[in-house]
Image 1: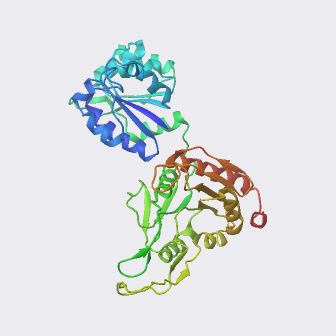
Image 2: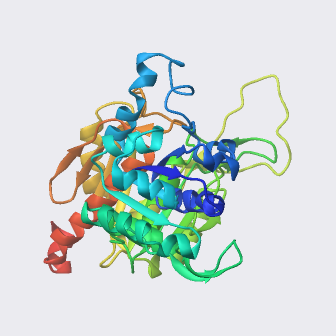
Length: 412
């Protein structure tokens, strides 16, 4: 989801940085908007570095196109239209009053009036300010309009007093966001094995055979599954990518090493997603010393690597198995053939020569070919969005296949 995070001028503003990280861990894209007072407590640079996006701090001066441009003047409308949730953390007494009374004197308050998406606010302030009749009336007015207010907790406050007004715990805020967005932990209880990245097959101590896979699609799938509540094991070939949050990572190098890792962990999983680009062949006789240049041709003898996907499909039992097909021609024909030949539940296929769908890019254009005959072409999406759609299709297939006995499923 696309969440706009409004940060206002309270001592709890620093906690919004960690909340931003938690929201990213769950797969959301975050646009930060800061009030002038918020910048007295934490810098925009902090949020820019964490979110990877520009931080909006003023109604005009730092918007695209520059001060006085049309693009600048209507940017609050554009942000309002593309956000799925407006989140204000911390929400001071001042911002609550402005929102309740429709005051629009900066970017955040103007955005609120233009926004039709759900709104969640998490107040934080001095206990007397929170309990004041004016604040309570403003909160009641916002609740009456459908704004979700995450009640502050009691505790030790920055002012030295003890009482209500302490920012709610992050998990409470996150749960409120999930409920408002109807983001369910629909993979809770599932154990998902994901393979990702290339394999490297050594020719000698210096050289090896590999492919152009970056691992981004597999890593995005592991991240999305963990964000939806699954326990995820990621078996990864060599890649420079960081481990997704809440994911157990097993590093391997060759296809045989990946095979052993999969054989060890797949039996305890309920879903297998095989996104790795496993080398089909390996050198039959790798040299223990560096191969020296000679006057003639160098002939390499290759032997087949294990078919990890096919092996997993044969041993799957009631598990769901998903394979990937990176093609350069006749994508649909090759994908359907692989679906049948490998005996899997879903094939995710793409033409790696197509713009936005090749190796080492952040987007993908895929078609999902399901065991029950459904073909689902997807437009160009971020790899994380593609991962979410794959998981949606896995859950749909589970519902379809659940009613069938194992013998019928194996013969379909």
